[in-house]
Length: 553
Image (cartoon, rainbow, N blue to C red; front, side, top):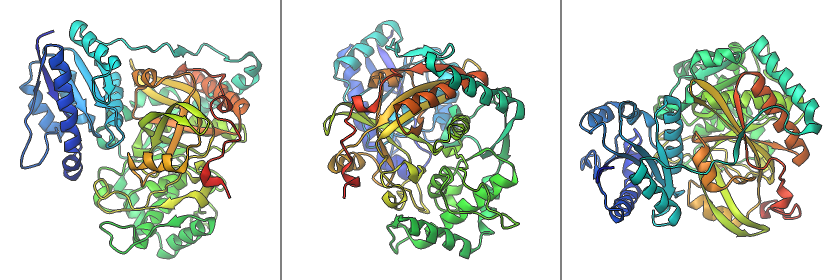
């Protein structure tokens, strides 16, 4: 490898976010430069810092194309991320880059750099672009140091992914009946077909979140391409009285709304009501178009028009939600969730629909959500001594996942940096319990699913608060352990910024649900891989008697 290495940094498209997050990126790049200098290599930025903008990110697709025109296509290249980034800013250039590519991020929860890294990795995987990847707090640890040495020597990094194995039929001999049930569900979906309502594709440059139509059609799913403009128009048709009825329903269930009077910095009642109009309109449109699941992009487009979509999204994913009446006064989707895939992530939409069908067939609560893989740390105490992930999304988690349900939920204003017109989050702490986690992604012109088991664990109130303050305190949080999967194994194999989670009442029912889900996806033609120890259970990690402090009387 040549001694000079080119570095680029993809950022947000929103100027306030890039300015606020730029100091963290500067710190990361300084550590990267020092780490490679120790290895005898110079890192040179492929684009300058813009003093007028106040940051040095690539902040648009056209800008990225222009920058890559000046980069030697055979040079070793680093894409360094300490922030959420739009993969579209660098993907055009990376498609024609011939030199070795290294994606890297700081191990920090402050800004979603790890989320950006995983999105970039998933997008490169879908695009068929070879890359290596690494992550570290300071790039001085042995794990990162050895990886960097391997990359400068061989142009690639080989990580341990021994926790992943291909699904080849029934996982447990005593679950053959469950496997057969899952396969029948998969065959039924392919035969009967279903519609995914997509309110505009390609949210925030997430190339990995767009599933090509021919891959969807092969598994029995078809896109109804809906417009966010149509959703906004439908919101305008929802009466104020209807939104207030939804608000009264939520307050009656115990949701706390942290309201203020300054719409620029605080959550106002008007913002909450507008979000509930979006919820009502989304349910109506899902019914009108016969959608089995829907996904709202929001972040590009609607953010400049109306409040954030997360309160609406969290309600949609919960069967227990404010009733929405159709034109003939019947309740739409009565007693059912309307599965929603955040940020129009179509891979998550397929996953949510499969989960919904399996959990409903087992008569389990089908509430599901996707979280960002935000960060994590080792934690010792409170019955634990292991790595605990922090999964966090911008409010679109169902209250049925929270300690205390709706009573444990609060609604706070979305951060102005990302959401200029505000809107309510649906915030809570995920309750302890068994979870099944998964991720669908595109690789080699085929759909793949990684599937595993884990547990949401209880942490003390002060540790939860510390983790919130290290990330985004307005957003719902899950403390999770993934059975038989280390931090570095997960990062090496996971090909998306999102992870799908659903609860099971106990370990036995989690295994049954996982068996059915694997069989259903396999029958649909999805390549299924099993991850980690599927025979583990939460009581081996944290005693069942340990209760979260928030739930104690």
